Image (cartoon, rainbow, N blue to C red; front, side):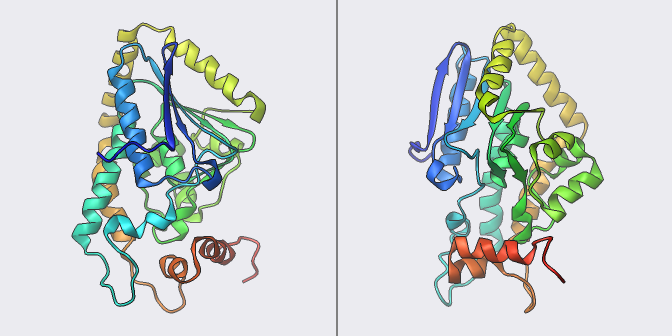
Length: 288
């Protein structure tokens, strides 16, 4: 694995491990190095018998704005230089399989996990929340999968989980309409457990972490194992096989002349401008 990123910190105390995203100036957008580090920290917590619960949190006003879009094509070995061939399917599949296996490792963490969510929690940030056992959202949270507007149009790494949590219709709404949800709406769809005022978020997380940390270690381990078996019996494991295949296909679609090619807009105009172009195109208030 690459050298650990200083943008994800680790602290273990009182039976808890705190894994904190620390890139607030970029809304805690995840680089690949940050994801590698986050997964490594989770493995450290799993090996520490004194850790009974893992808390994911973030510095600043936002939990996570998803993947760092400046790295997306680079993960496939694509530089964007004029005349360069598009990445092969094998390159896409290899990169997406590696990435999805990281989310699978988080999903199957052997210790209970809690996410504390405020501000923007979208894309890969929401995938992180979807892998956790429990999630508490602050009143400031805005939650969703807007990356669907870039190409995937309803295919995501955690599709099976989305359907199980929200039901088929609401899962399709989350992934196809791709609106950012209020925390109350996210709770109604099973994406988070409860909503608290922003100033009470950390205290609410500490309360639940403390309750879990008091449980016997073996009871915690058996409880997680039982949960994994139950999810497997419901077919949850399949999403970690089909997810990377669908993502590789979704990032290699053909755009027609009247369709928005987000990757091209990002290359030509930059990330910020491309995001504005994307949101303007899909703005629900825009007249047809």
